[in-house]
Length: 262
Image 1: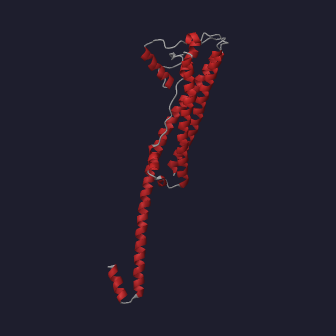
Image 2: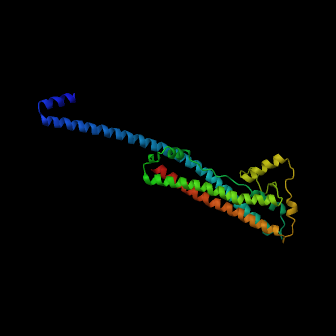
Image 3: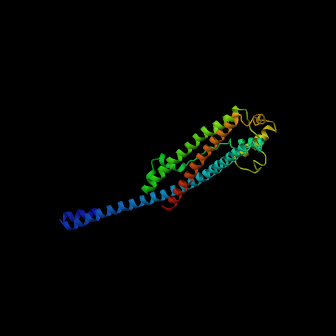
């Protein structure tokens, strides 16, 4: 219809009408482009909101994992301090059995696993720009880089501090020392206590260490210096993991709030 009108106006040399027809065509095209752009923007916004919901869910899982890591490291720090206190009072208040049990309590390590399948998908598909706020997008990239760094730090601390501590106990002949009720509640949910319970069941009460011989060494024996050193290093590793986990938890909570509000 419009084409016929244009042809007729050209034949009639009605240039004003031709100009009007041209304006109508241009405006129609612009409106069509605008509608298309509006639809794409609406779709992108819907996709962004969906991704934000999934990211928030991932961050909730990460927060739960960090809380468990913090609880574990606090447990280690607490019992390392208790172990040193017992050791320092050994001359006036011998507690060899209790000292050995605290050593068992601080041998456990916990692997930190922090992942976001949603961010991995977005990044892998090259769709980071789906997060329209540039500042938030940059903060997300920085956060997940730091997250990977936190996992690496905890892993290296475990490899260096925990493994050297357990190797020391193994090399001097101390095996797993069963934990009594004073050291471990039957319903305890921490790693050392759970491991000890399973271990005792598996060994059916069999003796698994020669700690009584080692703990009867004279108080001026160099073995006690080694104990203090290794316990202190074990605590140092736990403190490092604890501080890193707390910092990461704060960053996770902050990013989660921003995703909820933007």
